[in-house]
Length: 149
Ligand code: 4NP
Image 1: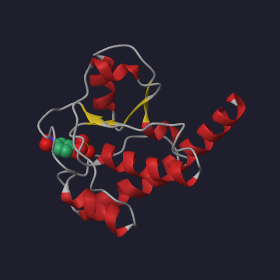
Image 2: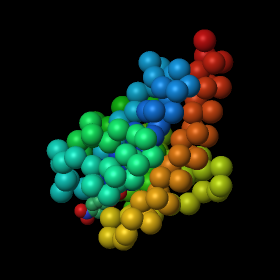
Image 3: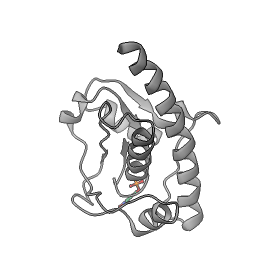
Image 4: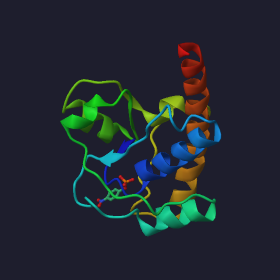
């Protein structure tokens, strides 16, 4: 999962996908990581508003520390980016399976808008997009991994 700062959107997607994978019994088979194309927040915990939004919905935001995307992250099987600027920035650095996260959104494709400069509402919208998109990802991963057995 990749966004700009790795303190709002991609960490939210990281925590939600990890939890949904665990609930589906896939925790051992799929590893989730996240990073940001910008390095300003390297090593920082999640944005307090992102963390509060997750906590209110029953997730644990505390383990996150921001990482910086670089070429070494192309060893991932799939890189999911939050917006078109992330897509451009990641693709400029190398070759790999890079897709917009919301290409998997059952409500339709698009960007996950950056909530950093807005209010709490933006973080709730991000969580709703992330939860329904991760549910679809888990469902597709389940069928891929089932057929691979
Ligand atoms: P994120 O949000 O990309 O969803 O983590 C942002 C976090 C920090 C900044 C921008 C976006 N920033 O400019 O510091």
